[in-house]
Length: 335
Image 1 (cartoon, rainbow, N blue to C red):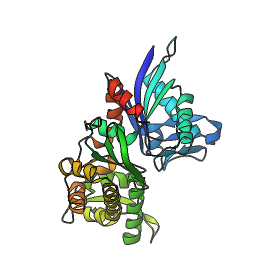
Image 2 (tube, one colour):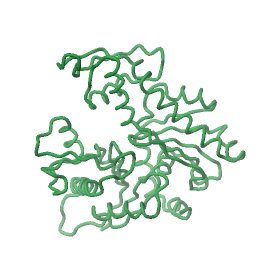
Image 3 (cartoon, rainbow, N blue to C red):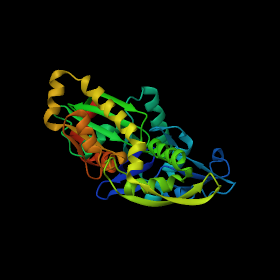
Image 4 (cartoon, rainbow, N blue to C red):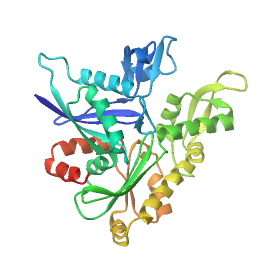
């Protein structure tokens, strides 16, 4: 028996989609080991490992297998995915075979693709079909990737931002930027440290960003957060404002706007003309911040759409592709 699934291992989260069931797993891309990670004694993965962050004992090692959108610790990535698959598929008398559509970053070389194949095959995946995350995202939000019309899509992820113009089931222009949600969280941590001398944990920053993060200059939302006052080296707190997020994160979103503009300017006149009606489509966890569509529309002078469930667009696209062999074949012929 062959189990089909779609897998996206991102810098922040790993998602798995099963036909007929939808997204069955969406957990942090993390592994906790007993002792040295090289010994391979996995203690926890995903959500359980994330809960341990900042509270680990001396004999526990935390590993983050993906850095800047790319697998950086293949052994930890293999261990994590193996445990996720065990969680989803209980041991059977006859082990199932797995066929997976796997999301990968733009611009992988042949050698780097082999590297990804090796990680997934050692996790128990028998057949691996690697498709660019940005293409999967376009399929996930129902863009007509097979048509000759050009569609522009941007995925603001945890580790990188990917930008691509897609037409005829392939990427005609694309790039990735070393800007993502994790970098912006660290920038906000440094901003608070510099302005208020307060150091926050990354989990507190992520929660505050989700609740009051904004790119609107007139946003009056605020939230009390607790951290460590470095002046007196004691626990303390303050009322963080939405405008604090805007001040800290605006430079990064402006760099993303510049990246989009560069891709648009590299297109032919005919391809660029296609964007006048469709505009720019934004997905990814970093796209959820209020005010982003307005900011980009004003900078680019075109329609900008931030899609619902943006964080899951790529794995949804992988799931849709599993049930559309015609489109899958079209995409693979563009390789």
